[in-house]
Image (cartoon, rainbow, N blue to C red; front, side, top):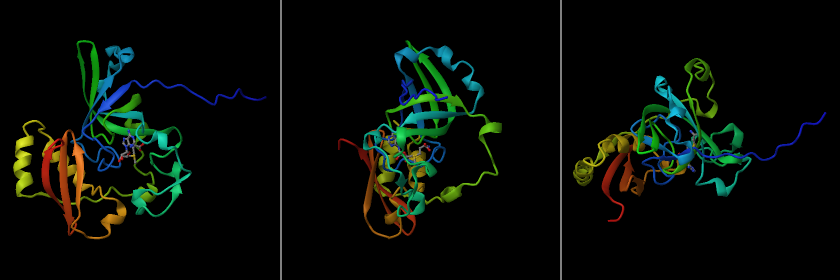
Length: 241
Ligand code: SAM
C-alpha cells in the first residue's frame, strides 16, 4: 500500500519578534547566552486572541519555532562549516544548528517574561533571544523540563558552553553609554554579554589585530576592538550620526 505524497505544507506565522539585533553579525549563536536580550513577539491580527496564551505564565521557559527569514532565499547546503569548529571543518547540515538548512526552521528556548494586551494588540515578551529583529514566529510551546532537559546528553562538537571574554568601556564610550542608558536601561549589560561571546569570525579570533568591529543594537552603532583576549568598546553612537 502506498501512502499519499504530501510534498508541500502551508505555515502561517503567528507574528514577528522584535529584538535589539539589527543584523546577523554579533547575534549570540544560541539562546540564553545573553539574557539581557529581550524580545517582543507581536501577534498578527488573526492570532491576536489572548485566550491562546492563557496559562502560559505557569512556565518559566518557552520554545520558539521560527524561520531564518533573512537567509532563507540563499537556500541550503548538505554540508556546512560550523563556527564552533573554527569555520574550516565541514559537517552535515542536519548535524548542526546552521541557518542554511532545508525549510530554514530555527528553534530556541527562551525565558518567559510577560503577556501584554492593549487596544487589541497582543504581544508576548521573552528574554535570552538569539533572533534577528523581524523574525517570523511559526509556533510557541512551553518548555517541559522533565521531557526536554537531558543532563546526560552528549553535545558533540558543541559540548562545552563557550568561554567568555572580558569587556571594557574606554573613556569616550563610557560617557556615551551613560547618555544612552537613559533610553535603554539594559544597554551596558547587553553590550557586555554580546561581546563576551566574541562574535568575530573564527579565523579572526586566531590572529591579534587592531581592527575595529561594529554592530547595531537597537538604533545604536557599537564599535569595539580586541586586544589580548579582551574587548574594548570604542564608541556608541546613533546609527544616523
Ligand atoms: N537557536 C536556533 C537554532 O538552534 O535553531 C538558532 C541557532 S543559529 C546558529 C543562530 C544564528 O542565527 C544567530 O547567531 C544569527 O546569526 C542567525 N539568525 C538569527 N535570526 C535569523 C533570521 N531571522 N534569519 C537568518 N539568520 C538568523
